[in-house]
Amino acid sequence: MHTFRASRTSSFLVVATTLLLVAGGVACAGGSSAETTAEPAAEPAPGSAPAPSSSGETGQSVNAAGLGFDLPSGWQPEQPASSMRIGQAQIPGSGGAGLLTVFFFGPGGGGGVDANLNRWIGQVDSTGEPTRESFEAGAYKITWVEHSGTLLASQMPNSFPSSNQPDYTLFGAVVEGAGGPWFFKAVGPQATMAENRDGFVGMLKSARQGN
Image 1 (cartoon, rainbow, N blue to C red):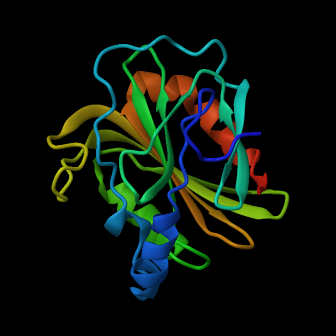
Image 2 (tube, rainbow, N blue to C red):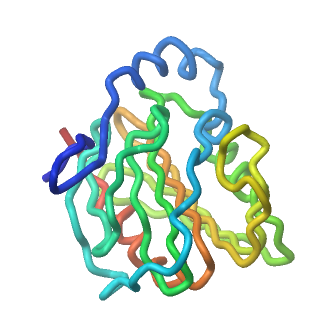
C-alpha cells in the first residue's frame, strides 16, 4: 500500500499545503468545479510509450486523501506537477503517452457531478456523443464520462494543452463518498486511451477507504 508520497517505489505526493489552500480558498469558493482550478499543468511526455501488458491488470495500491484505489498495471506514478493535484501518473500506450491527474478539494469541495462532467465534455470538440456511466463500488458512487475528438487548447496559462490536440480521448470521473468527492481525469491519444479504458474503469471500481 502506497500513499501519495515521493519514494523509490511510488512518486505520488500529498502536499499538506494543498489542503490548507483548499480550506482557505477553493472550499470557500461556493462550489466551484474541479476543472476551474485544476487543469493539467504539464503535457504528457511526447512520443510512444510501451503498451500495457494487460489493460485490466492492477498495479500499485495507493492512497489519496482518504481514498484507496489500485493503479492499472504499467501506469507510472509521477510527482504531481501542480500543488492542486494529489497525484498523477503517465499512461502507456501505442498512440503515445497519456496522463492521469487526481484532485481533492476537501470534503464537499470541487463542485457537483454534473458541473464537472459537463465541463470535461466541453473541453472536447466532437461530432460524437459522450458516453456517461454510473456505478457503485462498495460505499462509493462513481460517475464518469468518456469523450473523444479534438482536445481543445486550455484557456488557463501554462496548462495542457497549449494547442488543440486532434484524435484525443478524455476520461473524467467523480468519486462520491464519505470524506469526498475525489476527481479523476485522464487524457491521451485515442489509441492509448482505448487500450487503457478497462484499466481506468477497474481503477475506479477498486475505490475503497484509504488511510
